[in-house]
Structure formats: C-alpha cells, structure tokens
Amino acid sequence: MAEQPLKELFIDELKDLYNAENQLVKALPKLAKASESTELKAGFEEHLEQTKGHVERLETIFSKLGENPKGKKCKGMEGLVEEGSEAIEEYEGAVRDAALIGGAQRVEHYEMAAYGTVIAMAKQLGESEHARLLEQTLEEEKETDAKLTSLSKKVNPAAAEAPGRKESGTSGKKTAAHHAA
Image (tube, rainbow, N blue to C red; front, top):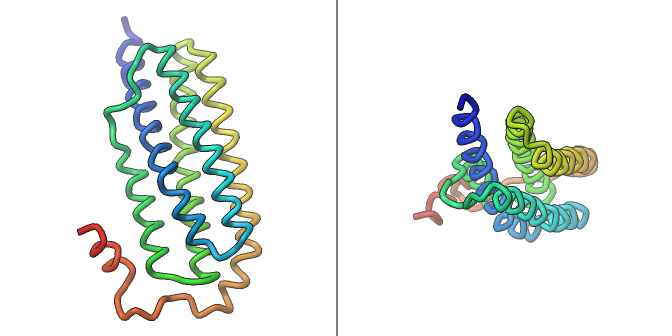
C-alpha cells in the first residue's frame, strides 16, 4: 500500500504536535506569571485554555486512529520554550513583555507550519474529519498570532523607553543554563 509510509509519518507528526502542545500547557502559566502587561497575562491565560483544547482534539484523532499519542519529544518546541525561559531570566518590565511576545509568536509560527503539514497529510490520506479538527486548531493559532501582533503595538513603544535588562551581572543564558544543571 503506497500510502502506508505517509500514514506512519502523519501519526509521527501528530505525536510531535501532541508533545509540543503539552509542553505549552506547562509553559504558558510561567509566561503569564512573568508578564507585566495585564493584557498579555490575560492573553497567555486564554491561550492556555485554548491549548488544552488543542490537546483534546489531538487525543480525539489518536483515539479514532487507534494510536497512542505518547512516545515522541518535540525538540523544536523544547528549544522555543527554553528561549522563553531565558527571556524571563534576562529581561524585565516592558522589555520582557516584548521578548515574551516575540517568543510566543515564534511558537505560533512553528505550530502553524506543523498544523499545515499534518492537514495536508490528512487530506492526502482521505482523513477529512481529522483535517477539519486540525484546521480548527490552525485557525486558533493564526488568531493568537494576530492578537500577539496587536499587543506588540502597545508593548513595544513602552519597551523602547524602558531599561530592559536585569542588573544581575550574568546573562540570562548563563542563568537558564545554571537552572537547568
């Protein structure tokens, strides 16, 4: 069967997304807590609830496929989450908020690319119901990205006037690496 390798890849990509979304469920509360802007904090909290829904959609797809969603680590999301943690350690105030928005947008773009990929695979495999569920998530990711862009127009002017870096004498990267050790 010619489509069998594509179905295996589809399932593998879904597992990657499942892990990525679960990493975000853990990271978003930390981003919300680190946000100075009440709008940004609320946005992260809202996206947390939305991300939990993304996990549920993926679990529905895995259930219908008769597959286990676990077993794959999304290294791309792991790196993006680590960068967000570094921004929390390295910056403060409005500059931190600007860094968090930038990091969150990189996450959204990563997810949009990944969802676009699995949607195309689902359609090729004739899995139109799965494609519809995945398209719902893709649209929500696009909406979140648009909200972040809008928020950046408020946060960036304040960040341009702020001092920004914490005065710790060490870079955030060293601090983050130290915490990881």
